[in-house]
Length: 192
Image (cartoon, rainbow, N blue to C red; front, side):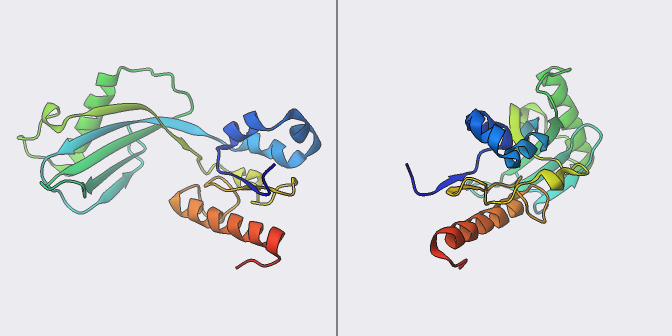
């Protein structure tokens, strides 16, 4: 009964909520099932001192990326290091401890930590389900939808929608702006 609906759900969640008649009537929505969605696991360590400025290390053997950043919420020097591994399924081949040990070995290698830092002193935290992430596989761009749908008062926003960027925070902002313009154009006849 609302005048405007904007969905920022993931494609999988959105498809599960749409009525069957919408899926059967509009081929627009069928392309959403072709957008890849992966989840991952993350291991976070807290170092109780400052390292170099924030950085991202990409494409490692054990992890897809590692980030380090000073904690802005702490009065004492503190650096948060996070290791992220993407997986198509949440089934784990290895134990949490195995992942923590591998993450710690990678951190010691890339950050050249002093022996005073131990895995236990850095309070490792394991998060089993992070994401979803939308990888940039070849051909995925053709399935990313525009903000305007065939349903007149229904609009889409999110990093996985049609932007010129890979699914990311920047893509989310671009998508939100495009969605706002589509709503303004549709209901008020202008896009500013």
